[in-house]
Length: 459
Image (cartoon, rainbow, N blue to C red; front, top):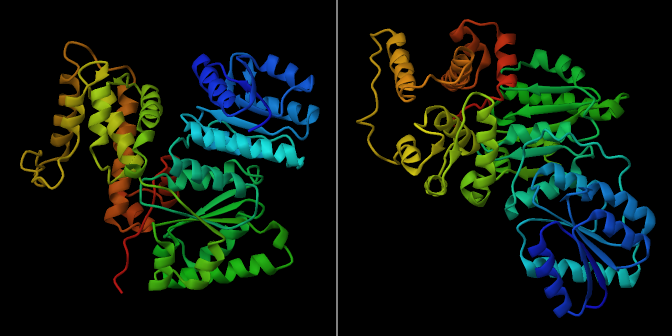
């Protein structure tokens, strides 16, 4: 390689490793821990390529990209970041950087990208234009540095500001609904309405619901679980909206499905004409077992969230290793519930491996030791036993303040989830079972981020 590479990273070790590797490869290197110094080099005309971190002591590397582009439009910029979220990937794409690489990265991978950037510089190819004033909400908590998640983030970044219909496929609990919401929240339609359609819709309710979504996003939750008449009406309404006089305001379509939407279409579970209207692009959210290297970051995020609900705990290295041995059939949802429970019930401020082992189910083991609930006895007795155990686990200390509201929140979500599962995802039946208003149930499902899925019909 031939050229001068500018490196900006606040980690001295990374600066040293990159300087040595690039020097051996034939490059000249200037390295700094300051974005201000980096910008002075750029403005002086020094360097043929930039490698910069995002979070620096004197600013955000992504915020520097527009200034670099104005000063040196043809200067390739490679962003490296430990902020491995979908927000970072989208911001990097909108800023039109040459490449984006999450930390920790493979050195040969980065060297290959530097080589490609220098070759583009030699050919004097113009850099792509940056999007104007990208605005990305920082509250979206889709994170992951594993290759499978970074690949997903790159795909989202490419299509988030388009009208392309998207299917978000995956197992329950992987975060399909969160990603579908992010496609709205992070895209150009974020100021428009967001409307969700579930299995409880009828052909008569579809028209008004689509009208509510004009100019925004329409999320279809498990369309394969909708009744055939609903699917047929939905396909017809989508066709009319996309070809009618008001087609410029037709909603963007995002559907959440199981891991094999094409198979659902082939088997007749999902109408083929509806499937092909939705499958402009299929984004597959990986199960937790295929991205276990993301566990440390996910655990930190979830324990921080639990701290806001009264749980104060950290996880030992041995406890993290214990989590890695479990397949997590319930994916992120199961992990989140487990960590919230451990944060509230762990005997000390640190969750140990034995706490995790006691909380995890034993695969294929008979549940002889599980508490048995006698349906002839009042449910309050079982609740009382669990509450008493919760108090006992705190020993001589009282539980954290706010217990009343916390217990109600902890009970409400699993109650609604289990009731929906028992009603096969039918919200009308579930509302009748719980004896609450259907609109109240719908609001609680949205507020608590509960996924509504219907079991597959037998063909």
